[in-house]
Length: 305
Image (cartoon, rainbow, N blue to C red; front, side):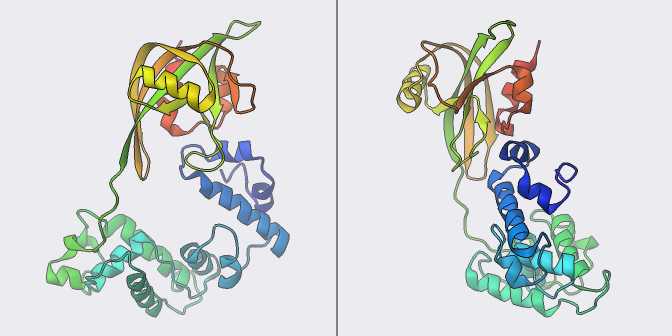
């Protein structure tokens, strides 16, 4: 990603198709759209130079308190806290903090403790830059959610949770919503490419808003049987298909949902809608398209000789 878009200007001017293709496999595609919005704002309002003040950073699209604090402290050595999930866990254990860390009052309390200890040194090794990264790494490598490596922790002598024997019960957080299990039926609709005879697959581009926004997919619908699949294709998209054979099952886990996908070979009973959201693509074209990793097994299947 950085090799292809090394400067703020490059990021600001990148076509969306290139942007999303470079981001392929990293998930949360709205993040890269926000990165580009932020880059464009930097070009328009700050002459291409990323601002050093927390207020200016906070004004950029897609940048919240955590990201602004991380940039300010790491890139510019400013005494600003950067509190993410890792840091919340480290500090809640260090202080044996028994409140729900997802509550706003808890975040304010923990942010206050983080801020108290930010060093005022100006060097890389002794200033805010190293401190912020040290907390991040401590949470990622040592003070991990399960089986924390307390014996290797440089703060073990000051950790109240370790002293009180409650490390594994902290941090406190309210129960997360269970992932929603979704039965998804995918249609592989193929034809021979006019002229060359190469095999092509019908692809659909998702709406820009929502899950996997703007990316190409092998068309699918929420259904529980091939007949429901056929009806849903007709109702949702005006695409008349006939499932002719089950191929395989695959699945993909998102943050709040879990797709169980039944992949079927299907025949079109009429041409797909005349829209830029539909296209026929051979395997070479598919390799260049913005296709999410949820469909990787399908891509691999189609690429087999």
